[in-house]
Length: 369
Image 1 (cartoon, rainbow, N blue to C red):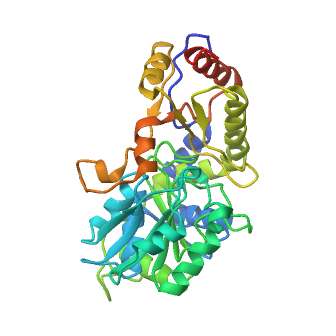
Image 2 (cartoon, rainbow, N blue to C red; image 1 turned 90 degrees about the horizontal axis):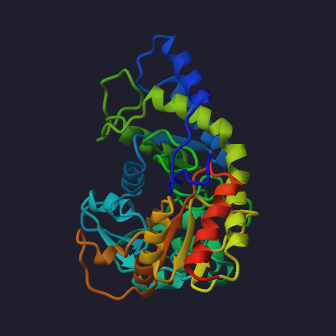
């Protein structure tokens, strides 16, 4: 690495471990369709999160759609979603003919507040999509995850956890994020802490929901290799090649978690006291940051400056209701502010301390700090 090497905002890490796993499988002359490697990958995720069941599917948007389907969401139903999230969250229920109802997020966590959700519930509300932004949990001031669980019990509205960014993050009571909802969903797209290129996983402790999810992803049948279908289902299966990569990635997860936390800590120390910079906080005892996220004054000018210095960034999600795909009226001040000021700094697991220091130096230089 030289002082002038370009630093991308994100890059997945695949290497010798993944290659060895794939070659081993190819030497077996397998069918590639999901089988024993997929089952092993599901078991690894279930054991890591503490869930009773894990079902993997082809991507993390489909996983949310299947979670909603399994919980009875259908045409005309309403599903509450945060106005700050990746657009996959509302799109996953829009695909079912349901209506995403957007609620603004809290300024410190970028997560829904239970009382704001309560105000948005109507007789047509079937589910809440709780997104744990960047591995963060609902704040203690908002009642923590327990407030959402209580709201779900009180109203009968299903709680789905969109934990796409939260593998390796836990609630204060020791449960892995994704375990509090009826179903939790993870993503393994390229930028995530582990990746299979594309892929998603669903976790649940319910035998009934697990059975529904397995059938929904595999044509409605109880198992592969049979053409008896007791219910409607689709084809959202995984592949053994993805599972091979996933198994190798899962073995590296215990090393990646502390490194992700250390990356965030070094940024926090390097940017401390810089006027115009607000990194979002993380309790690294529990949270493993997926990306380094923050609000930056003159965000676009900063991004241009960093690009000129060979440093990549990515703007954070714009407010969903203002996206042309939805174009809805309403005021959501926090998500709108993130759309103007939110920036993800380089966050890949391969970052070394010298690169983080170089990035912080350039940010400090931009702000005259």
